[in-house]
Image (cartoon, rainbow, N blue to C red; front, side):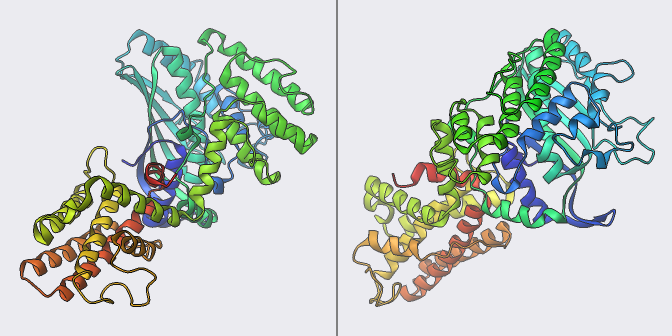
Length: 532
């Protein structure tokens, strides 16, 4: 099962998988890429705010629809203020007949949220905490609105509340990342608070997990250009839910009352109508107030309003939503963690390969300073090639079994491999006349190993690649075997260098695949090794 830290990484990883592995399926005359029976795990569902710029996410609509669901509503009139296309999915223009809210809060008189709450309070080991959404009595007939989310199950293990949702159909762009992960993370947080547990993982099983052709181009851009970072890497705060069950009904009523006042007077000062006195619910009101009020404010007032808000995830989402309309809005953000995130995101999205090259050279410099010439102390067959062999074998095992080393990513191993292979090439070339590795007119020579290594890294081809990783690792393994046999058989240095050059090409291809394919791991590597 693909597992991701948060929804941002899940969206990008899922889009990449759909574009690469999805079957071409036409449904109701619309082309899709589809994965059947896809399971997706979100490890930290409370990191609910998307930070994928190409997605152009509407965080206000997400929050509004989520609270509408959790309050048990199905009326279209209110929802249309935040989802103008909502009537298109209604049979009568008045309600969503498949709305999740009434089914969760009043299924033939049963409030399923309360029922699960009471069940888990009575028996923390229970395996019976289930909420049903699909209704066989109603949902086999023709309708514009058949629920996509059909069933949610809950279980407490090791004092963590885990959630599992089953869906008949899930569009990764508008459904999964658009609202489902957000709304169920809110329910997850609330239910965990009510039963006194920590929030655990969230698993989604979608029979049809798909991407519509309308979104292919944007999904490709998201997969190729995602910076691998989220605000949560930089210590932003969260607005936590803190309302007891007995007060949730009145709190929800109060929320909608305040939302109506804000909608009627968006030009008013933030907080002037009062509060629910719940951090999560009040953050939603501020989201709505700023998003509706900025059209009545000056750019200066908007900047000052945002500057007065906490360094929280939902504030990052507001900046992201409004920045395209206000050039320079994120240039001087006063909240430190938010400013750090935006700065890192810019670095991670531009000149990324230059940062990778600089980080590899820094890693080489520091390790060379620590270990000196130990890497070649006992020669090619005893010291140099065994160092390379360990990395090649580790990557081969990873490609075959998926099992890596704890604390060391595939990217870490690939970088180490590149370092050893390039040093090996330098070692061999230094035994030959000039021109064997670096051209005679190169700006550096082999006399200074640091300069020669830097030149090889700077000229290495790290452009995006398309071959499957397993194929690249197989060729890498074969190329190293050839190097090993060449040294074992005492081949001339020229021949051994030619074999090492082939090995270098496959090592670079593998590194490029990992650099462009896993921005989260890349971001961690750059944080550790980028020059200060």
